[in-house]
Length: 247
Figure 1 (cartoon, rainbow, N blue to C red):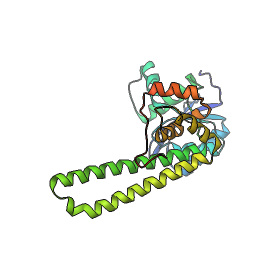
Figure 2 (figure 1 turned 90 degrees about the horizontal axis):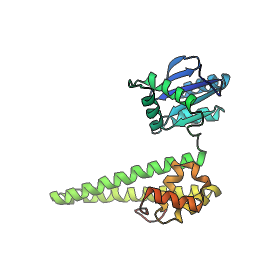
Figure 3 (figure 1 turned 45 degrees about the vertical axis):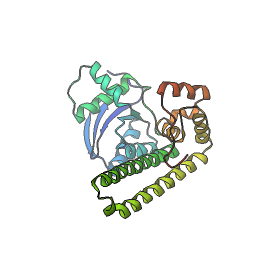
Figure 4 (figure 1 turned 135 degrees about the vertical axis):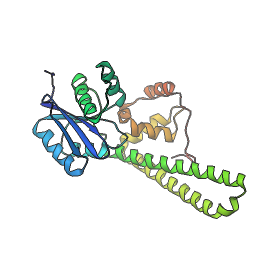
């Protein structure tokens, strides 16, 4: 039998509409709708069984479930997909279905009980959301500029000039607004401000890159200047600046 450090391990494969669940050591399988009501039900089940709940990072589809579990006091971990994939390969598992993935996630947690990360605190989650929206707007602006260039080549720029100028101005203002909100979140949290200051002091990491690192790697909260420099050398990233000025 698996050596479990918790009463149970609940592995979940999260998709937009469904939660495929595998429980250890009982090997119980469930498929439930990915809804707030089900999140509440899962939280109650996990608490009653002293279970550790784990799931892969799915690009954001797991965050509502994760927040609900955390709010209920359930121990939960987000696992890197690459590690689950390597674990599946080591077991010779080639088939890939949601049910199989849920079992792999649960068994990986038994194999590596220290793996994964806990839910970042609220301000980190807010930074992630703000940076994601900023990225969407910057990408939209890039596409708009490409379209403006194409219109000029086709000789149709005059037809869309006023419309394109208005849209470009709107996108610029929205990006500036988001950047101000991002800076406000960092400035009002002593820990985030200290981490940002250390990261931004290192050549190669600018305001945008430092904020992305803080949002995606909250474990950097204890980083030192020497560690930040090592991180920069490892990444080889050029210094990034906001297209509209520093954050």
